[in-house]
Amino acid sequence: ILVRGAIVRTLCQIEGIDSVSIRCDGEDLKDALGLPVGAMDDKQFVDNEGNEINSYERVELVLYFATTDGQKLSKVFRSTEYNSNISTEKLVVEQIIAGPMGNVEAKATVNSQTEIINVTVKDGICYVNLDNNFLSTPEGISTNVTIYSIVNSLCELTGVNKVQFSIDGNTEVSIDNISLENMFERKLELVD
Image 1 (tube, rainbow, N blue to C red):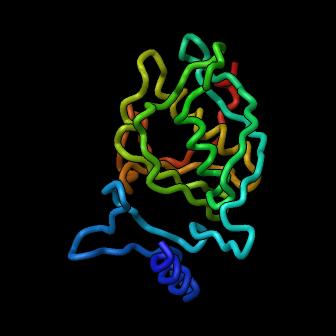
Image 2 (cartoon, rainbow, N blue to C red; image 1 turned 180 degrees about the vertical axis):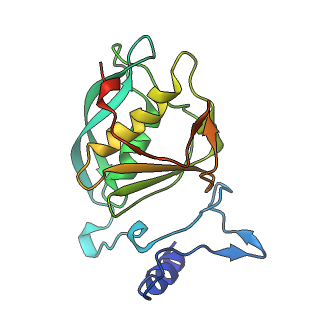
């Protein structure tokens, strides 16, 4: 990770280079789980020095999960402690995948087997790269609810206005006729 960080942060200093993809022996670089790392930018690597390494912070999140009928979104407030080495945006996506955690008024919106490949923010757009488990939505949950549970939750964060999804680095994917090539903005009319 340190070598990747050094390469990416160095190259992203050059005018016109926003991200770096690394290939080894003609194949995309893979992480420890064998998943493609994808394009990396300099904001993915956190500068922590001295006693800040592995420090933990408490944060109050506004998350959206499905209502019991699976057709609308329910707002859930969650206080959680997290390692400050990960971005708040990635934390939000992790929390959505983890589900409502005992809240009987809400249901999970995303397949719990979904893996996060990458989450980055640039110019108000949060780029969320997930594996293909995201394409199989939980039973009884509408596709809009699945997508906007992540979009609305991320748009609660300062600096995020839109969300762009990709599956294994590919945006040319659809879920139930909803193209992920589009950028998604907050949709409050889905909130119950």
